[in-house]
Length: 421
Ligand code: EPZ
Image (cartoon, rainbow, N blue to C red; front, side, top):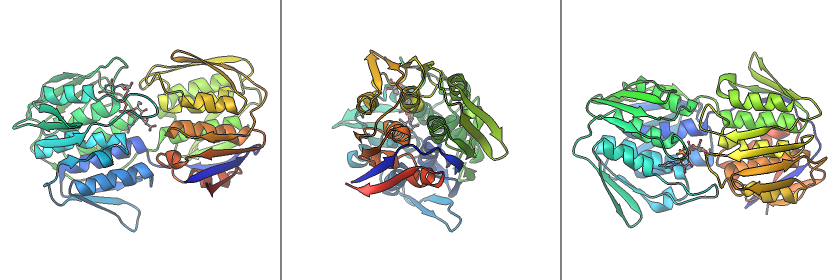
């Protein structure tokens, strides 16, 4: 297995290109099941999770290839197999996004229940509730969700869960509703930019979706969808991660393609900490004052502070001049990075869904273990500033969601290299 070795202390300076959004690409790839003809997707990041989704789609009869321009071309070749098996789904929870398209297009879906993962239990009750409302018969057999429907009829669907809206739950119900008969109104829909991007792609294929980006999405069902061309939005979580890399190293980065409008809650908190963030002609420019102010952060569904940047913000606040608090309202157990940051000299104390962060003068390099995608990112950020050498093990977690992160960071001055265990 690979590890990343980081020697802390370099200030990052230069330009980093931001890739296509993983969490927009994954449901949009899954929706290729819904359409006739060829789909052409541009700006699809080359990530382990994207490759995993393409493997699953191939098993489900969707052929894909990257053309010489780097665009991904997908086409359904056969609809025989509608079983997304455990050995594929267990590797990537976002595989659940094929469930709605299989049901809508082939009227049947057999998808292995995704298990829990490092960030907590990952139920799919809202997905099932929404699809049953549209007319699906549901059964659970040997750990697989079985769904079938003679006909799917539009209806009003409430998708609010105890942690707010569900991003992929909204994606699944919205994708299914595009081919249901009549109107579907999704209440308490997720408002994430990635849901908007999915809706915009589906509309380019002939769907009739309005309200995307608001808690109420309306879908008028159509007979069929034709594959279309689409370019994936930039990845706001990758952009936020590199904003924090600029702040933690007291550097000066330009993030090409980053969009201020996708990061308002993050910009609000970082500016309070003392990070300077301005629009530049290619995206966003980020630098920071040497002294970091402590702040309180609570993660919320969009447009609130994203849970996917919680671990990264925690790494930064370890060095603030005073005590901060981070409360996790989306995945209350998403704190596996706390123990690892403490091993680097941080003073973190978990009190239920809140972590109290007592600012320290410095972090010290250590051997640390990545546990999930974003926790890995927070350890890399801490390693960039820690005194001495940090080795982040199990770096396959990071490769799921960041394309060549060590190359992007090395190009702007980080002393970081990939090594074999
Ligand atoms: C998406 O996951 C993202 N993944 C996650 O990013 C992100 O952390 C999450 O949204 C929240 O923003 C993709 O888009 C592929 P949810 P998703 O359903 O859709 C509960 C990353 O690092 N819930 O919005 O699985 C759930 O337990 C990944 O890129 C139910 O109770 O998240 C959680 O507490 C990690 N019942 C909350 O809702 C359900 O049926 C939000 O989950 C579904 C979810």
